Amino acid sequence: MAVETWERSGAELAEHIRARRDKHLVVISQRTDSDLLHLDAEYVGAELEGLADVVVVKQGPITYGLSESVPEDWRVYGDSARAYPAELSAGIGRPSIFVKAFRTAERRSKADELIDLVNGFPVPPAALRHCSVQRQTPAQPAIRTGTITGFLGGGERAIVSFPFGVTGAIRQEDLVPNVRLDWLLAAGQEVSGRLDPESKVLHLEAAVHIPRLGQAYQWNSLVLCLVEEATPEAAKLAVLPGQTITVPLADISSNPLDQADDLVTPGQIVVARLRQQCGRPKLSLIDVDDDEDPVRAPVLIAGGTPWLELGRDLLPPTTAELDQRAEAAKASAAEEAAQPLPAGDAQPVAGPALKQVQLQLATLQAQMRRLRDDAEKHGSAVLEMAGLLAQVDQLERELDKQSEELDKLRTETRQKTAELMASRSRAQKAERKLRRVQDRSGHFASQEEQFRHELYLAWVERVSAAEKSALWLQDFAVGPKLLTSFYVHSEEHRRKALKALVDLLVGRAAKVQGRQLHQLRIGEGGEDAPIVRAEDGARCWRMSVESNAPAARRIHFWCIPGGGIELHELVPHEVTTV
Image 1: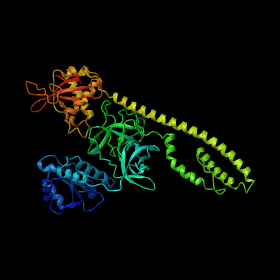
Image 2: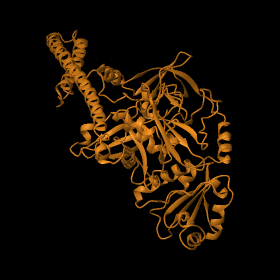
Image 3: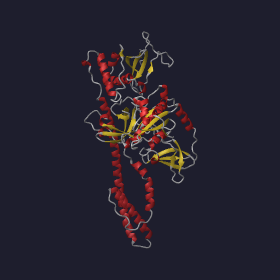
Image 4: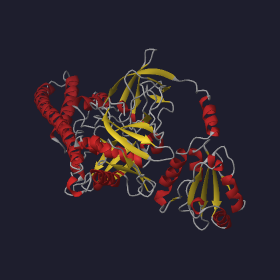
């Protein structure tokens, strides 16, 4: 899309920001004395095609005029940018945060952050029309459709069968580098693309879609991550291909004696809580409930599988996978070995014993073929060939023996790696159990004081420092059944209930996966009347504390007319009365 350079006054730009628009608006300011920290307006505009208009303003009188005409948290100046939602003219929504690159290396990441902020706005009608037009674009011709029949070489190749009797392959390097094809595609899946008639390689047509972080997940949800690297101080986790977040040890374990690489292993799939801190994504492996299911990882190719799944760890390759990877190389080596080699061409190569034996074997086999061809002309070569045959036989036995030992070592390595990942997963669960709320009943004059204190501690732990100013605990009343029903439960149930209550009282329970807020009704039907308290007209609501557990706990609470919440009772799932 075209990017507009603003030539009018700052006051007119302020009017344009406030005016009725059918698209979002992005304003990017650029200093005139240097372009080193300019955000790439063309890149932002291309990524937001049909969703937002992009305006570039030069630092100077225009930005000064804009600052005089809008509130402070609407201003743009220097090498910075801000996004304004389309519904701003109707008094709905607010401008985004101030986005600025402080180092040259941050220019692309800050541009992506700005794009994510715009993608988080409600989609305006113009963008919906734009998407509708895009869907009507006809597909390009000459496309072949086949079926995935299997995978080779540890997911490096996918085999595709076509109805016209031809078999082709999809290459990992053509799709998402370093992501196995069996993490993207599924056996039996139909795929379409351009088939190279000579190499039989199928090039999928615009098949891969890697969403932005803000599109794939909601904040505060549990997500699956691939451990890419681990050191004693931190670990690098991939939330999406190419989107890696560094997690410090403090967010992996609360035990100062632990080390990150003792708890997570490169290649392991782990569950983490995705948060936002100061406008940046953050992951925590501490704040994870074992009974809360993670969000399903995105499918990167339509019709395929989620790119991450629990238990889908990157273990060392099996012998079969290594054999498959070497299949093409072996075919090429066989053709080369069929050619006679001049005597003396083969030089001993220093390296592992297995490789040395293989090279010697290939050299002797080539010499043997040459001598066999010349045997009739050179009778003396018969004796030499016999000696070579004996050497070949000996080397083949040695090769078989070393291959068996290597296969055994590879199997042991794979088993040990799997055991290590399992033990580290157990260590993470144990770490979370050690952080349970301790019994402090002897320190309070009443049970309600103890409950409010424990709820406050749960808020301190569950809400990050950057969010605390915006997510204060709402005031609430304690109903007559609450404390008895709360403290009759186990410590584990109370801990989970406190987390759910924090989500409720800071106003984000409706956005947290699994809370399932809904009104409690007099019957089980969706059309039954809600339960209403006669004395004040308060309506009873119900919220999930846990899921996928026997008698999963629920919280009942009253929403009082005019505002206010009264916590009523902690009950098992089957209790639906008050």
